[in-house]
Length: 338
Image (cartoon, rainbow, N blue to C red; front, side, top):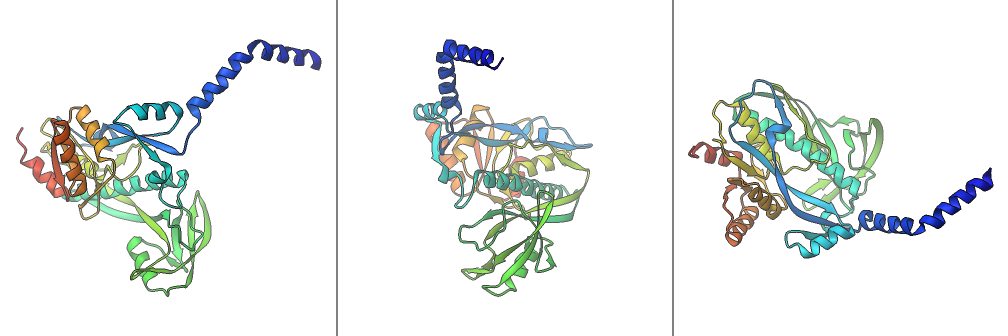
């Protein structure tokens, strides 16, 4: 019996070896990933499609996130990038922070999205004079510096430091400032449902005392009406904060700020309503133009200057608007003619 099976397998390989070789080679060509990334113009996404809110007002137009298409480099994508001026090849170290893995990057971007959604909700509700309150805040490690003396991991939720509860980033920062440089602290954390005790050495950088990690704060909120978000796992990062806040505001107010227009934008949002800079402006602007957007909100400063140069160079038919605070965008829209 064993001999017959062996003979059949041997016969199969003898008759099909050319096909099998081609199959393996093609598999390698299309799936092997090099230590590079490909960045290319993305598209736009109607934010309201990602937000569930009862008794919200409808819009004739739309508020849209602009995103970058980022691909892992394979032989086909590298070849396309070499001949496509709109595709750029980036080294892995240009995408990842120092001392960061792909898994760390993914976790960091997911945490930043959650933080951005919380900030956008608070800002949008406050601007609309709607009811919003903070139930609790969770503090996570989103990045660990290369010179950090700690076994904290990206994704750790910080529960306590030397037995003192971590309430939010502000209280944790104040606690760290009260400690001595060179002191080792015991940090209780939760990661993937399990609790651990980790350690960190208090270091001094400039005039600040640090534990060598960047922290992200995720807020649990109570709103009226209730808000739920439906972003997929591959949608992450903080750059949609501004447009999410504008969409929430518009859903809460009777006046339709879109006035029937397709509005695209990018920029982070802080709790005070300030808008922060982002990366990939040229890809996001090209995606907005390709989708025939009429207005493009972009953070003031270098992001705005880069966008203006691209509009002038390529003669894009789109209005680029500089925003440093959400009030800048609201004022522009309220004065916009129908």
